[in-house]
Amino acid sequence: MDERPAPLIEVHPDATVLATAVAGELLNRIADAQAAGHVPHIGLTGGTVADAIHHEVARMAPASGVDWGAVHFWFGDERFVAADSPDRNAGQARAAFLDSVGATRVHEVPASDQVADAEAAATAYSTTVREEGAGAFDVLMLGVGPDGHIASLFPGHPALDVTDAVATAVHDSPKPPPDRVTLTFEALDRSHAVWFVATGEAKADAVARALADDGTVAETPARGVKGTAETTWFLDHDAASRL
Image (cartoon, rainbow, N blue to C red; front, side, top):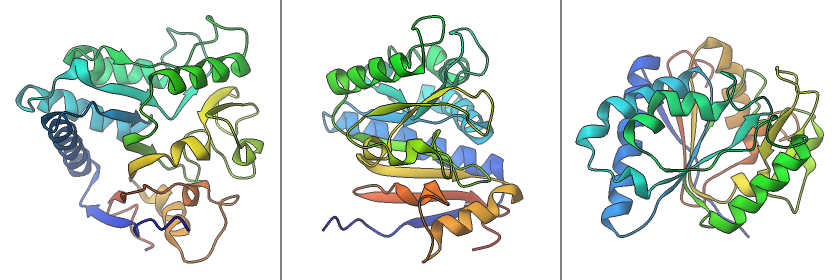
């Protein structure tokens, strides 16, 4: 049986303090891995709190000692829009820190002006993960929606049931844009450390449902991913208010 550690919960006063703490911890993990001779693979997420974390990484990067050219960056999901769209998670992460720190191993999901459809993008991204991935993320960061979704795995959506696949196309997303590509539960679950990040009162119910003793993945997809070595929930006081 796959026994994984119980989740840790770390509560910070507000989103700003949380962003600084997560950024610092991420830099420490990457630096420690590199010091041990390991090439880290990091899974990034999108959203407001992720953007704040990314900007803090950029601010703290010069003192971190990280060799940014020797870190692989991946995305848990992506909006299927044009490559230059501001909606792309990859574009947001590049603007916030990837380009400024000199990251060169950034693996993006193909955009809508690069491949025919979201299915083709999912297939191409799956191939890249298999060929250039390490078999697992060292750290996977996941935002949590007010409905409990993670990546682009939404409650009751067909993508929740996809197996034997690394990535899958998502259509009719309840959040715009409607077409997306997401890693599957099976791919996300291959992570040593999974870090959930959530801030604000609007996330409190989803956080509580995700961490409750009872509940289903179909109702709250955030219940469906745990790290093999660590699962940590980084929350601000408002997001933790119903625990």
